[in-house]
Length: 201
Ligand SMILES: [Zn+2]
Ligand SMILES: [Zn+2]
Image (cartoon, rainbow, N blue to C red; front, top):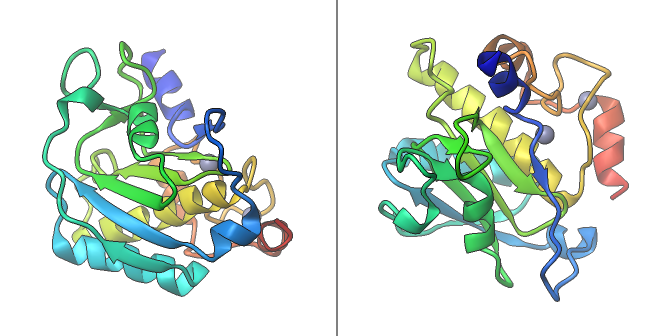
């Protein structure tokens, strides 16, 4: 039962920003520079691949920031995972942040349901953990492709894309509710319906 709940929570998380004076209009968001923060041990090639994919898909400028070592204030009760919502709140400011971490992220302080990513919808921050994305011992190449799909998915939520794709299993705005097999069916691609939805924001 726990495994089922875990998978259901993998992709579905979006956060509503309630305590900020800044309004995150699509016009403002589309002009942004994204600060990419490695939280923990993140290979530099992976960081480059992430920033390149954000730039080429959305056209946003990206700046890779210094590595942040373990931040104990963000840990969950068992001190082994980060609480995804705490990470999002930690980086709320006038700038935009994308946090990538090798540590698992969970949805609640005292729960162990791990997620791939979480984002404000719309809002200034998104986080992706790649800890679960190579659970099946995949190659580095497959891992990188998976991270890019989850990254672009979460960035779309920050622009204001609500919900998930029901049109094409190849679209990266699918919910991911069936786990890695579903993720691997996706391409680094948006179906026409999701593309139009995003462009109209
Ligand atoms: Zn989603
Ligand atoms: Zn779609």
